[in-house]
Image (cartoon, rainbow, N blue to C red; front, side, top):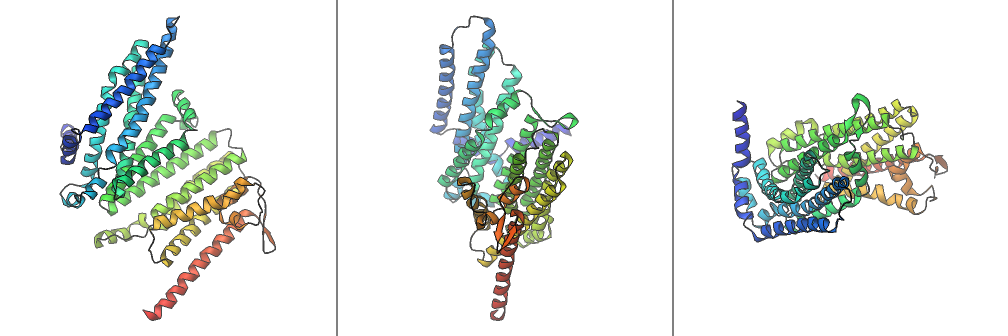
Length: 478
């Protein structure tokens, strides 16, 4: 039975008509040969330059250090080229079918969406695997110098394979979402460049932590850093895989699995963050705690927008399943996000933080989640659903998170009565853990959290009144 199960999986993966077609056509293109030649020329040049420029060691004990240095040069060179090459192989896989007016034929075939995605992705990964295998002779030079164990080389190739899969899925995601290959390519490489810019400051510490076997937490609850990063990378890959399928054929099953995946990863990451806060020594710093809460609130607000889209399904059966499912209700996701934030709050209370501060912060985050979801859904309804809900939601989110706080970055002593300080939740959260100026509103002196909640309560009441007025006005006409 086990052998038959493995054979079924292999048949499902290898006996894929999309994969066979892409391999037969794609691997015959001229650019494939040119990319492989350029890949090997760069690695060969880096190896030759290192060997010719390296000074002859006066002691044999210096050879292992040179071997580790060469291994690092080859790894980072390969990683850079894999990130640059892989999206170029997948950005046009689905958008190209759409441009050639053959995507509808592919959807109408008996192939399932998972087979289409695996076939398109398998072609890119097969070519990247060919590149990695062709680089083995140069990587083997490291063993002549020493200093690097075979397990480290295997782990490095595993990281390269994982990064190739993520980069390929990212390109395939934008290819499935966009109608033109140029748009998909620009967005994929834009996200990669943005991710590199944001993560370059944390990269040295991350590499050092991985090389030293750093763990998150202490005692029996300690989690290896590499395992934590691997699980998050697999969750990201599964998320992109499901999103690609949903763009190809929107179904309730895809969105339900997306919700379950997010639920598990959100609670797990909040639990790990709470574990760090409980076992760490630097979480007593009020600025660090405030920054952590602000980051958690931003992630919660950004994630909530993915579950508020009121777009119905075209098929009546799918729409009935959506209406009956718990994972399609905004209140459920607000509760999930608050449960994750409650894990962080519980860790802070265990650490000895003030219970009043913890409860006030959690209440402020809960109010922001409720009020912001109500305001954005109300504005979308008032506009007749014309703009895309995601565009409206994230435009407003960026505006309230970034624009009102710019004067604070330019001038810390900005007027405390300025309206932007009351609209943005970040200064309000920060003021609960660090000193911030009071707000003078209509002769009253309020703290920032109270002023923020009053402003959003007023906005929610205004949007509700406008929706009620519109309904009463359109009622007699209907």
